[in-house]
Image 1 (cartoon, rainbow, N blue to C red):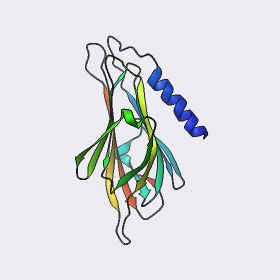
Image 2: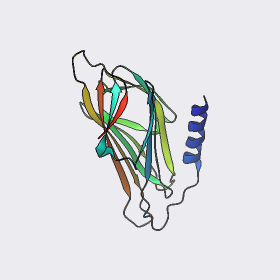
Image 3: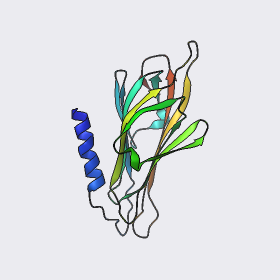
Image 4: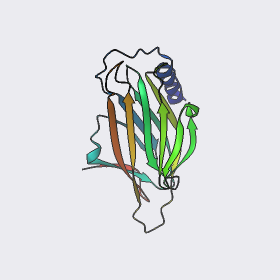
Length: 182
């Protein structure tokens, strides 16, 4: 309950703050991906070295998540690319899923997106909910994929947009959830 309240307060703060797009914006946006389930709890941000880690998720297991992107000068686009529904099936996206869109890129990839408006800029947006990982047959080594996070700002009134990307390798398998770092 406390976590839901904190999420609500952060969401209201990010979505209701009056944001002004600066004349020049050289600050790179930020993102955060909080995942909890199967005894695992971790927040990934743009500061993580994704090239040196892999998130191993337990097959047929439910996880809670909070994904957000932010920039003081206004956010133009937030994206989360992930595998198909056979890999990750959403159980219950929560506030405010109606301001986000989801589309199929291919048979095995989906994109969840939030578009900012230059005429009504917001500091950021949050998506939270639950998903369940797909089933992996016994004896199968698992189903690998990538969670790709992307945030772009407006780049100021006349500048080039700033962007940040993170690609987190995942493996859905029949063992406990863990983060492998190498």
